[in-house]
Image (cartoon, rainbow, N blue to C red; front, side, top):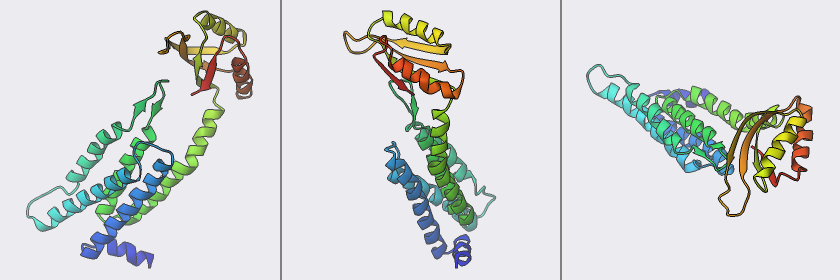
Length: 230
């Protein structure tokens, strides 16, 4: 039954067109749900529209190839979709006030969604569904793996707020005594009048086991008002 369904999608009939667009709808919705649950900029509607549009563009290219004379490149319109979606993805990438980059996964998801839509549009539903499964595994399983690797990394960034300017030098001395390497520090003034400065600091600990102890020591410092791992 499944083979018959997939074979029907590879033909050039009205039924095949319906199957392709429904598959594009399912793919866009599935990927969009994951992004929406995590409150990202591009959610269900955005991903679904991108996938549907990409599928239609590819079917349009196939239609032109089959119904008009001349040597026409069927992949030309699809290539424009791949590059064009890149501009859409840029709109989902933002830099927060703590210099954190947000939206890269969403942008990559939009691009992948468009590519899957192109595959569906030309009738390559088998490959599209396999890719959908792998994309969902990436978004669900590898997200947890990425968080775990980030949690146990020896090199990481800290966002630190200080009560006053003198606390910065005291904080640096304390880190030096704890044998913590400082790779980079970006110091900036607080936007709130009367508040001390804040900083984005990239540090490295000697071992992963020492990371927790270092963080607890930093949180207990009098010279530190607030600290957060980025």
